[in-house]
Amino acid sequence: MAYYGQFWGTSDAAGIPAPFCACPVCEEARREGGRSVRLRSCFRLSDEIMLDLGADAVTQSMRFGCLKDVEHLLITHTHEDHLNAHMFMQLVWDKGSRGKTLHCYLTDKAMEIIDAWRTTPWILKGALLDFERRGLVEFHQLQFGQRVQVGECMVTPFRGNHPGNVGELSGMYLVELPDGRRLFYGLDSGPWFEESIAALAGCHIDVFITEACLGTSDIRHPNHMSLQDAYEQVCRLVEQGTLDSSSTVYLTHINHGTSHKEMVSAVERMGFPVPTVVAYDGLKTLSCDSQE
Image (cartoon, rainbow, N blue to C red; front, top):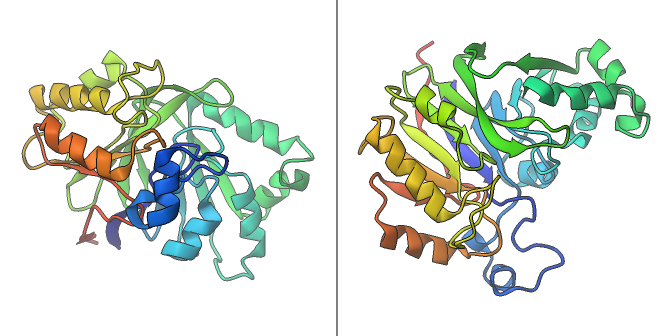
């Protein structure tokens, strides 16, 4: 099994360029394309494992690849830019090419949205229970702090500081790869709870993916992080040994207040204590094969 860790989207819920926005960042993205354009956040860890499948999932699969082999889907929270109900309808239209169940994992209270979808006739045409009976999709509830096996990987969800559609707190995921490396995916984390920071003490992370939603803004938001917040978070994790010079930090979930070029320049000026990359759509973070 190949693990490549590719960003399929790196924006916040608005996307860049945002459809109703003519700000300088959005207009630059329309002119220049390339790394200036960001689809909504989504990450493909391997052929079999995805993290989030949101509002741009159809476009992302056109751009980056078929979802036929995906068996496991880790959902951070229930906002539509991270969880798109329509994608379960797509399972019905696959012409029988998959032949496998999509296992979808949600943390704690987030499962309540699935209960609502099962009894709501205008969501998935009221057919979700039928999809489950046919083995197209199966939902699993994860508990914060409990380590579980997902495919070949071991996964531990951590509590983020960001409420979703049913009032749940977002899930951040520590993923242990078969080759021993660890990847952390923490989007819509907000300023971290102390319990989540403390739980990573003594746990070395090789690939650390974090939000920098507010970019270079000096706004302090209760449920999102700016570049300055991300910097301070990284420094704390370095102090406790979670990150070091062998780690790589990737900044993602970026809004249209700061362009890609501005983010890159700001990261260089700030001097992060570990190698830090401003993520862009299509960027790959890993290159390894499983040992099995």
